[in-house]
Image 1 (spheres, rainbow, N blue to C red):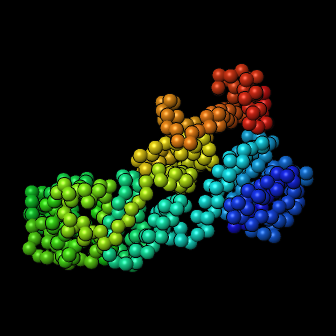
Image 2 (image 1 turned 90 degrees about the horizontal axis):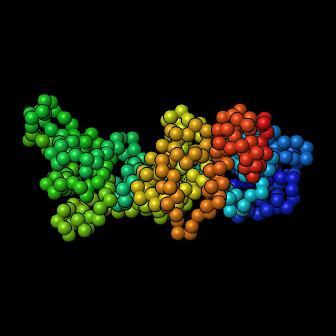
Image 3 (image 1 turned 45 degrees about the horizontal axis):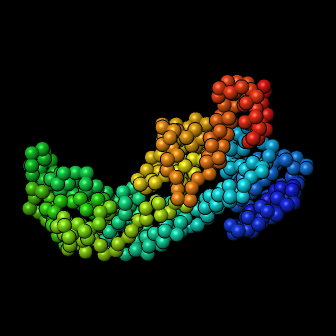
Length: 444
């Protein structure tokens, strides 16, 4: 990966280059706008860090040029003199983020870690092969490698993992990398239906098989012929139906309800559960022979708490998904929001995280995801989840204050007096608080 640093202060330029090298970048540098324009015309960069105030002009000229001609290049602005109008334009152009001087190295490194993950995700063909699985942690990389290894082999797979950890996504990834990918992926939740309905859904039925069966119905097993059948929550399947499923797995043959005609299909079965099936076998709730028939290959999906470093990437992925779905324009994700999520227990795993991001996208009207901390209605609930290493409360409060100040200024059309009224502050209080973060232009 290649990065470019445009910064007129030599000492800061050297610091930025050292940090970038730690993330594996090959680095070019320049100290003037003229040199910067020449560099980006002659080279392709994955990442650009650009100061806005330069000896011979504004770094925004370079930003506009790059995002117009090479929109795939990620850009981070580093400045002490950005106005709200400038920052707004930068995000509209597609800038990844901005950092205000003076900044803390750990804050910059967090941004660089996230943008590097994003760049790596775009570059790695292997990641593109498994778009269902988002993350760069060791646990996720191991999971992806396992999926790639077993997907081509036409064997049954049992996926274990907590509720919401992404078991169905793993099943879909197995299907998409198999020779069956052109056929259907058919899924059913074994815990969602009563036994008699589950049996008819799986195996189908003939007309007159029971009251209400007014016509023949093809079951999901037959529908999945040539493809993959995903049996979610297999641990909740009733014992009476387990025997019939076992026979099907052994013979690939079944008889629809109310029929005497045996049918044969070619189906790969992938099952999943959040239960400990070996314990269920001891309790008499699950057949041991069915377990071993299903568990030719066993995959364990790690819970989100064991791969928290994937949270920023997942948030960005979901933010894009829901921005498209709801017609929203999210230009930036609040660092305070990420910090908040990193501290949550997230017992619902990826599903819970996805729901939080969806709600936040819907409620956002500023282009900043999580800027208003609308995640919870009770303020005290937002901060009760503190990781073992602790949190930096001053930074969290500062992030919230900054978002409200900038939002009020935007609503007031840049008029500070009106913005102060929105926040119940005097003009003097508003100007003092605003001066701590930047010096945006605006009318009194």
